[in-house]
Amino acid sequence: MVTTLITGTAVRAGLVSPSRIGAVINRNIGALRSGPSYWLVLVSGFFEPLLYLLSIGIGVGALVGDLTLRDGSVVSYAMFVAPAMLATSAMSGAMAETTFNFFFKMKYVRTFDAILATPVRPFEIALGELTWAIMRGSLYTAVFLMIMVAMGLASIGGALLAFPATILVGFAFGALGMAISSMLRGWQDFDILMTSQFALFLFSGTFAPISNYPTVFEVLIRITPLWHAVEMVRAITLGTIGWATLGHAAYLAGMMAIGLFFTGRRLEKVLLK
Image (tube, rainbow, N blue to C red; front, side, top):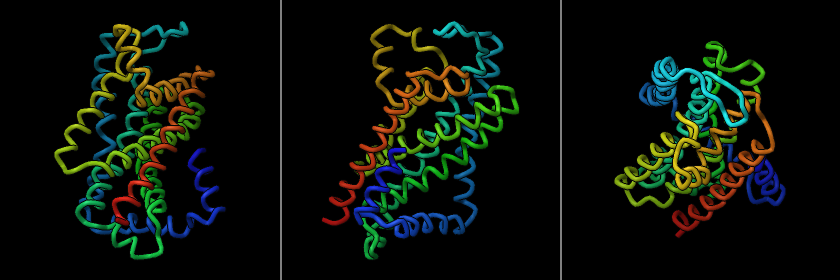
């Protein structure tokens, strides 16, 4: 994993300390003991993709019937939609933590200013916050995978292979979320972010093959990150892994590395000015 390589190199170079990253994570774990409100927010994030799966994947799927994919395989509509909801769940879990919560801690509560009064460095804050976001996203995807297996939408082997893929999705979107949050001016900018995230959710091959769209839209969709995440997770759960799957993983790993590097530089500029 790129994060492991980056972190390992930084640790050997003396740029980051695992104990200081752990301290940032422990601060977030401590926030869980602040009251039931945070737990409600944490649990509620799981239900959105599940409800989409039940309403569209199962409900609309009864009208749509089976789909024939480009490789010639025929799958039920629910099996087509479920991996997309899984990837979306990983994205939503990571981005919820690295957008709203990250921005609130940086801009209003000044949590990071207080942390920087300790030996913790900006890049260690970024790594700690990203790791915490992945822990939240992984909770959602683990439960979602168990539901997919129970409903016959994925095999146990496919679910075990898909879980690390969803962690990569969480890392990529978590790093992207922190990078964007470090540049937001105020809460009004979240309208743009939420609209963009919802557009990704609708048009990334989640509910229909992108070959159904006009060519120009299909090309645009192929550039977007959630499409790569959906295609990677779908290939794993449907057992159609190929070279394209590695390409999707490389795209997400590159996105994570760039986002993490950019966030570290932005935190240095914003918090140490």
